[in-house]
Length: 216
Image 1 (tube, one colour):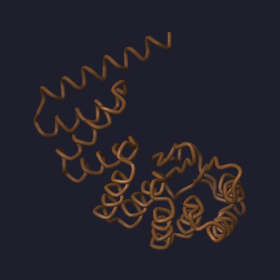
Image 2 (image 1 turned 45 degrees about the horizontal axis):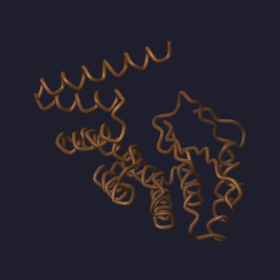
Image 3 (image 1 turned 30 degrees about the horizontal axis):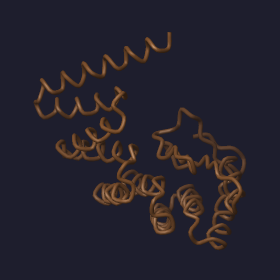
Image 4 (image 1 turned 135 degrees about the vertical axis):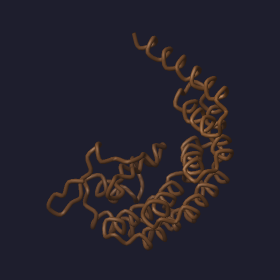
């Protein structure tokens, strides 16, 4: 993270994980906080969008508060406020704002991803972080990002069976993505199912070769 006068800037190298790349938002989690690139146009969130993109955290919060006051269903406004709280190292308030975003926009995947990250990484409550992903998948069952996050969270907590279920759903949704097969292969390997792991790794290798061949 690099600090500029009056602003917080994050380089691409600081990015830890993308938590949303949907058509209405693209929030990213970075090593020391959350920053937003929020492609929203034609509504009251434009000002907060521009402030967040420029790194003006104070203005982003102010404009986010204006947006939510004008339209209580503006989930992205609450996520902008969450950003400001994270910048001030107030994780509990950030989580409350993320929860408000969920309440305002129950089908907005980014809200669950942000809430999960705050609970998991900032507060250290892995169980709560997983609960946000469970809720998100109930609201958006076909979201590959949520299944990927939950699969990794389950894997890291030793729930290999649950992780395999999520990675299998990823493969069902995107059968040509080699990374999904590698994720599942890793879980199979950890369980001692080496034959299944080998099958997935071979499939991942073939898909990767196909990608490289298509680029030539």
